[in-house]
Image (cartoon, rainbow, N blue to C red; front, side, top):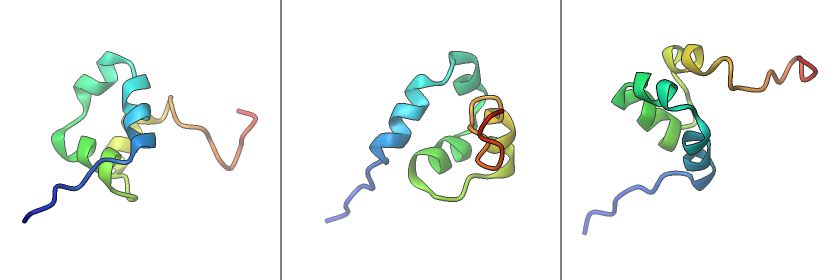
Length: 60
């Protein structure tokens, strides 16, 4: 039996919180990376830059 990989629930919540215009810009590969993988491609990071916390400068 082939088990289907389940998305990370925390990442599903992140996707739900993103504005529609951002979600519409994501490619299938970027969406899969966001939901299932640890590594996020540079193209996805660029699209999400305004929504991600800056770990190195948390006050910004």
